[in-house]
Amino acid sequence: MSYQEHTQTAKHHAAQVAVITCSDTRTEDNDTSGAFIVQSVRDSGHEIVSSVIVREDPGLLLHSLDTAVQAGATIVLINGGTGLSKRDNTFEALSGALESPLPGFGELFRYLSYEEIGAASMLSRAQAGRYRNAMVFSMPGSTPAVKLAMTKLILPQIGHIVSELTK
Image (cartoon, rainbow, N blue to C red; front, side):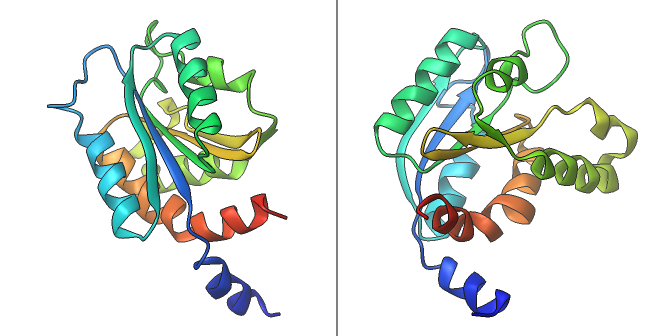
C-alpha cells in the first residue's frame, strides 16, 4: 500500500476525542480555544467524548487526563498552560506522564508559529506523546495558536494517528 493510499484509508478512522482546557481564567462563556477545538473536531467527523476546563494544577490535569482515557478517548487535546509563567505547568505535568514523546509536534508547531509571530514562538512549550492508549497533544491556550495546531498539524493526521494506535 502506498503512503497516499494509507493516508486516505487512515482518514476514515474516527477518533474519540477529549478536550481539556487548562486555565485559571477561562469559563464555558469565554473559552474560545476550547470551543474551536470541539467544533473543528466535530466538523472533521470525529466524536467528542468529553470537554472540561480545569485550573492550572498538575494533579487536576493528570486526573482529567486519566478520566478522558478511561472514557475511551483515543486523542486528548489540551490547551493552555504551556507558557513560562509560574502558573503554567502543563509541560511539567505531562513530561513525567507521557510514555512515548512525539517531539516532532512541538518542533513543527514552533516552526509554523515562528512564521506567524516570529521569535516569540520559542516561548511555547507545546508537546505531544502517547499516554496509555491515547495520543495527547498539548498546545498554547491562545485561539490563534490552537487554530494553527489544529488545522496544520493535528486534524490532517488524526485518522492516521488513530490507525497507528490500534496496531
